[in-house]
Length: 284
Image (cartoon, rainbow, N blue to C red; front, side):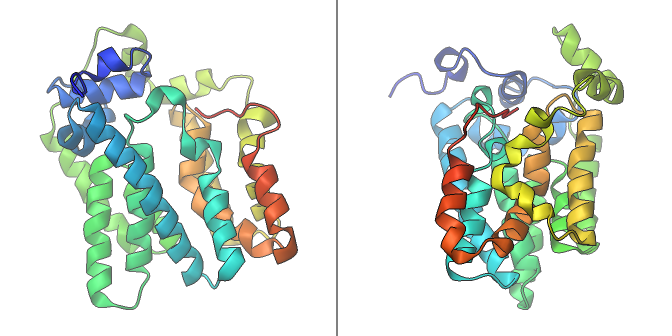
């Protein structure tokens, strides 16, 4: 298994985000907000084997966490299983091919959801463990505390925002790179987000169809679902990617809401239609 440390050689078509994580793993400063996501590059380095271990393990953690999350909200049996498979079947959770396995989205979402389940439990020891997990998640992706607060519907997880704040003060970052487009995006996130989505704000293939069956989670709207979905989509205003952002942000909540609505005799059919895409799905 020689050469597994040379991720660039083994994966020449890495996306820009993955390239930044490998730069960070090599000790090179990167532009914001990537300098805040230092934990996994430090742990995995440039070892493709380590990145694959983290990536595959994250699927297991996410599945278990979603099952626990669904159980805490009153689901059980086939309905609980449906919630898990609805979340795992989302194209944005899978993510773009160019970011597999060098990415922070899936590990951060898995840890964040697990932390929310621990925080929402009635055992003080689990609650403490939940905040510890959330701190780890916040070192993987700076938005972890925000979505933990939304999923748990509590202000307390927002205290963990101190972690990316400290990372911003302590971790070195680059003001410029050898990629002019990357530099422009980092310097003008709002302008970049608007420009990259120009003409696509009403594009159902980008903003609606990737949800698959989870779109039915909007059937019985409540304040919790509305706020989570709005915040998840608001990320598009300051980012160039789309599907992976809003689905990692709102996926657990919409999967939960959808599973609660599906009659048990229809679960298998709904899951088949959800997992087997009729047209190629946007994943970035």
